[in-house]
Image 1 (cartoon, rainbow, N blue to C red):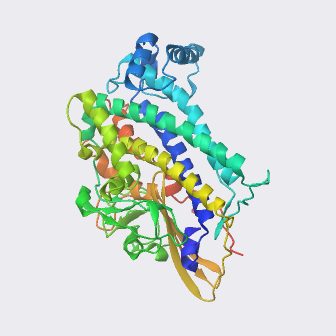
Image 2 (cartoon, one colour):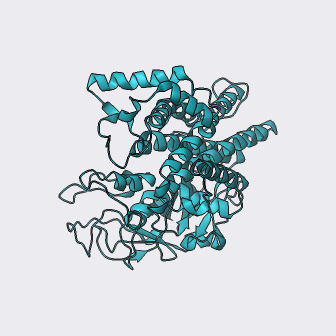
Image 3 (cartoon, rainbow, N blue to C red):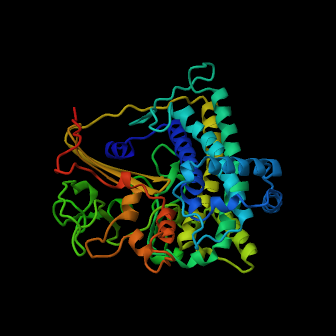
Length: 494
C-alpha cells in the first residue's frame, strides 16, 4: 500500500495511520514473543533437564528475579507435570527434535524449568496481543482491512457493528496484559539467559552496517514518526544517519540488489525499480551462483536488518524509551554476571535476541501511545479512515517501507496508465540471508557464522543459535519455480 500511495503522492487520514500502527505494533509484539519462547529459546533451554528441577527452588528463583504473579510454586509445578506427562507419553511433539543433553546446553535444571514454564505461559500472551490484530484487521493472519488510501474500518461510537469504544477498550486491556508479560517475564528471561551464556556476546557479530526504517507515522504525509530509523555504518552509532520521511531519497537512492550469486538470469546489480525475477538454476557453484535469495545492498554495502539494527538506530537517534529498556536489560545482565556489560555486547548472537525483547518493550509503550492518539482524534470529531486513490495517465513509480518484525521491508512499484508495470519486494530475510553481492562481500548470515564454535558437527546447535537469532523467514525471501523451471502461478493484472 505504502509503495502505491507514495507513487500517487497520497495523504492518509490520521485514524488510518493510527489503526495501521496499532495493527503493526501488536503483530510485532506477537511475533517477538513467539520468536523468543517458541522458536529460539529451545536452542538455549534444555526441556528434558527441567524435569529434574526442584519446583520450589524454581519458584523461589523466579520470585527473586521478577514480581511476575505467575512465578508461583503451583504454576511451576503444574508446568513440570505437563512436561512429564508429555515425555511419559513417548510423543514429544514440539519438543521432539531438540538437541537435549547437548554439551553446549549449560543452564541449571531450575533455570530450565522456569523458562519452560514461561514457554507455556507465552502461548497465552501471544494469543492475547494477536487478538488486537484480529479486532482491527477482521482476522489474523492475512488481515482484511487494509486499502490503498487508508483502512476499511468504519468508526461509529454508537454502533455495535463498527469500531466503537467497547472494542477500543478491549484493545487497551489486551495491550496492558501483554505489556506485563513482556516487561516482567520476557525481558528478565532474556537477560538471565544472556548472563548464563555471556560468552555468546563474542560470537555472531558479522555485518555491522545496520539499516532500519522509521515507523508509526504520526501525520498524514509520513514525515513525522514515533519510532526513528536510519543507517549506521560499521557499527559506529556516532555515524547514524536518519531516514526522515516516506519520500526520503537517502533510502530510495541507496538500495540495490545483486544477482551475481543468485539463481536468476544475468549478473546485474540494480535498483528495485529495475529489478527482475527470471529464474535460471545452475546447481551449486562455490564461486558462482548458489542461492535463490538476491543480495541487497545499501550504499553498495551489505547491511544487517532486524530488531538489533532497529534498536541501535533508535538508541543512536536518542529515542528515550529504547535507551531506557536497553539500559534496563544490560544492567540486569551486568548484575547477574558481576561486571559491566555495555551496548557493544549487542553486536552478537545473544545481542540480537536481547534487542528483540528490548524492541518488544518499546512497542508496548508505542501501542499505548497510538491507542491514545486514535481515541483523542476520534473524540475531536474526526472519523475519516480512507481517501480514495486517483491513478494518473503515464508512468509513476514509488516505494514504501515498514519496520517489520524481522527488519526493514520495502516494496517498489512502477505504474503505467493505472496498471502495474513492475513490482519488487526487498524483504528483511533477503537482506540477512542474501548471498555474496556483486563485490563478493558476505551477507549477514554468512558473516555471522564465521568463528562460531561447534562442539558436535553432527548436532550443530551453535549454528542454529546464530541463524535463529535473525528469526529467518526464507519463505518471504525466495521465489520458487518447479523442477522444470515452469511458473507455478501467474497473476493477471486486470
